[in-house]
Image (cartoon, rainbow, N blue to C red; front, top):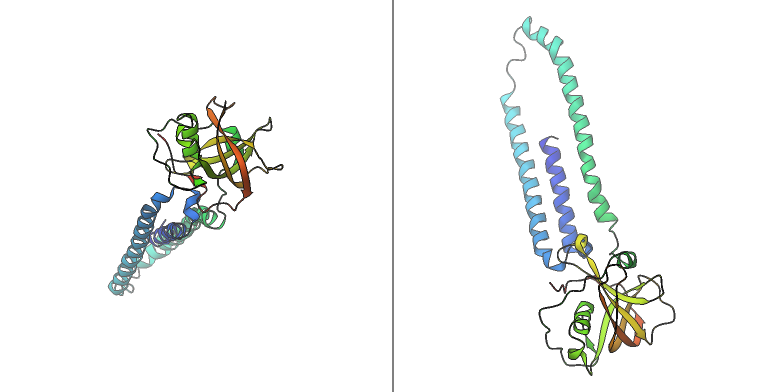
Length: 266
């Protein structure tokens, strides 16, 4: 891969990073807090690509100024070397360089795939085939005023199971998540929690009971309002804890801007 091709590939990678970071595309891959790092990395790649292209342009100009002598000297050795080695090696080298250039451009194809065909966020299939990742939190912040109080699904699950619902008594809560239905027919409300990126995302699940909609489509996003219930079960995948919510109202909602829950309890 020559320097010009390297600069072009670097430029495309940098532009792709900036495009993802300046839009919401990056939320399909990493958590929101990493956006400044993506912007910095994309900017650095673009600057490096432009500097490389400028350096190569300057070098090519210097080489052009330095040529112009030695083309007409020596009919014997000059013509012999040129006819014997120059034509064959020159054409072969140029042909090989073209092949390298074409192959190197294949590195750009994954970039177009990432930009043009963004993968969907992990959904019900991953949730039903992966055990719940609920872990005991270090503590609980005081719930804000209001009724119902909006709360993260991971936060509710920790308060309901490990806190035995003490901080939820007498409060109505509002949660958002996507639907997953077990083979036995138990409906779950799920949010994929992540530490860094989608590659380490794991589901946190709560069971739904009470006033559940009669038809639940897997991967559909719901906003549910309800109250704590002491009912709980164990995840058949990894025997992890799954608390329940007694639903009083539910309505479909669009997929949120950030489909992952960053409230990760370690």
